Amino acid sequence: MKMHWQNIAIVLTSLLFVFVLTLPINAENADKTCRKFQAAQNSNTVLENTRNPIQPLNSSHFLDQTSMLLLDEIIAQDFNSSQCETKIQSLLPGETLWLRFSVQSKNDHPINWSFTFMERIFDRIVLYELRQNNLIEIAQNGRIVSSLEATDRAIKPALPIRLGPNQAKTYYVSIEGSLEPSITPVIVPANFHSDWSDAITLIASLFLGYLLSLIIFGLILFRQIEVRFYKHYTLYLASLFVFSFIYGGLAFQLLSLTTSVIFVAPFVFFVSGIGQFAFIQYCRILLEIDDRQPRMRWLFIVLSAIVVMITVLAAFDPWRLSRPLQLFYVLGPVIVLCVALIRIRDGILQAKPIALSLLLYSSGLAITVYYFIFPLEIAQATHAYDLILSSPLAWGYYIAIIGETIFMLVAISMMVKAQRRSALAEANALRLSVSDHELMLKKSDARINALEASLAQDANIKLLPPADKRFLKRATDCIIAQIGNENYGVRELAADLATSEKTLGRRIQKMSNLTSAAFIRSTRLGFTRELLLLHQYKTVSEVATAAGFSSVSYFSKMYRQEFNETPSETLKR
Image 1 (cartoon, helix red, strand yellow):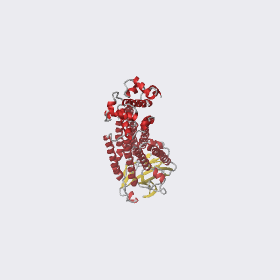
Image 2 (image 1 turned 45 degrees about the vertical axis):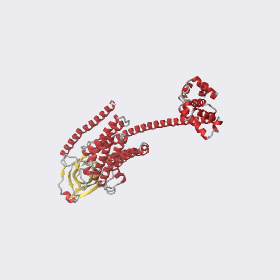
Image 3 (image 1 turned 90 degrees about the vertical axis):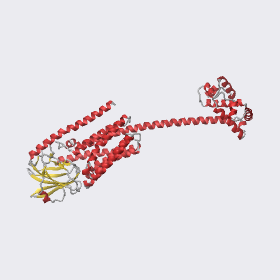
């Protein structure tokens, strides 16, 4: 157990170290960006052969809150300078954000660059070129732009910037519909943007393929474990798939959807809320929280109620009311992690991998949510994958989901093994119970057969009237009931049958041609024969004592006279 806690402490410390390590890098990049802006003096210079192809856009911006201004009116507006600021506050539904910037080429031949964003969720972006105090539309792109009008259907929207040798141009860009908390415009070479978009598409496709395989695996295998569990876990994986498929942009790229973020955002947050609800429920089942833990059970009920409430709020207004749901992405798994640690102490075997799963899940989502709210400054990159590796928003999410699902599969396999062992133990116990029952039936059949055989040998008993048969049976039952009492004799039998000794002797003599004492002795001997035949005792002495004979030699003598063989011979048979 000590080693287990040490491992947890090491992991937590490492994650905290990585988190803190990114802060000075962030500040250093911000200082470099600021110096570059100060030297740029509100212009953007592009060079084809540069070590860092991605360049933050030095621009000024204007927010049209009505989205009703005409192009001529936009030119006349006062734009706010964003010098030393790479990020611009995002816009709300119904608003249009305008950017104005200049680009100058210091190349002796034509070049093709792209205007794009670090983010990728935009309804429409339109690029205009300023020509003789008029805005001329150059290109448009975005999620509500049809494939015929868009410049391309890449997962990252971009607009082309084409400059001749040593040429300078002034551009305006209108932006509509975004779900990001801030917007970070950049300019990159066209081929770099293509590689960047392809890398994001490849990673997103692999991740969705991973989720889809888990969903199929869950539908096939997990349903054999517990119906409630497989439904909740499959619902959780399906919500992750839908969220990543739509929010990541593959749905718009592959299906050519043209749905505005105004309609997509509430649906996306609703799906993610359902995923959190299913996550809480299947963790409750895996951790075996039931009526025996009323406090923990109420805790999960409260968590479920909270996630339902904040999901409704986020779906109602994702731009203003989604922050509680984003915080719950971190706080919810942390609370369940504490419960998992308690269940480790309670001896729940699968609680250990569940705790590791929740640790990775909460840590990864904490990184994702933090850098979603407070994005990093633009990092230097020589290749497209450098940008992805330097983006905690992307790899934090992938680490959270992949790490959680891997360790959760380990927990599920441990639970399956435990259930299998329990089922085998129950089957073995049932098999033994059935075997014992069958043995009892065999013994009862043997006794019945032996009794029927002994009765069939006595013609007088077989031909007795019903009244005499009942009397004889009562007498036999009384003797068997006192079989171990060696002092049980004629007087006691007569008293049990409510008759006199004389009448008892007369009736037994009439029915069996035996005296009362001989009848009692014969009944005792017949019972001992059954015991010997059924191997109820290992020695003759034990059988004699059980049948009420105080002397083993006397018992053996009487037994030989009755059955023409010794008790030992019967026992061997």
